[in-house]
Length: 205
Image (tube, rainbow, N blue to C red; front, top):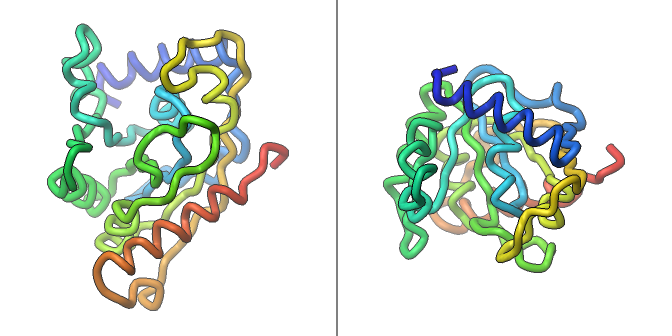
């Protein structure tokens, strides 16, 4: 790990465990070598760092580009493997960066819903994840977070000592047959397939 990433990793790990009693169920299912995609539901600003500390290696993150305008934290984000995304348009440059990273053997976390939930219900999956799968044929690790919305709801303030649990599902591997088809319909179908696997995960696992 790079110096900045390692420092932030240790800090996030300490805060997650002391402030939110964070735990990971089935951590052993996370793919720690080679190109891989971590696919996770999106409840809170806490989700990306929590996904990061669940892994033992560096991962890369997609985040809306306006976060880089934040004072203090914004300039640090690129050093923490954050890839800015313009959410006002279809930002293909960000997805191309992710595809290159995964093909080169790196891991990235992608939120199929694209944005945080307001009410706790899942949002429809977007085709971006499916595009990355189709172009890389990388395995996908479905993950579901519980408690993050209660701990830091969208538009609200952090509520310390709210327990958060991340449940990791069995990796999904894709064959050539899974990638037959063209364009948006294929990408949408792949994203929805992964989203179903995420929604099937339960807290008691």
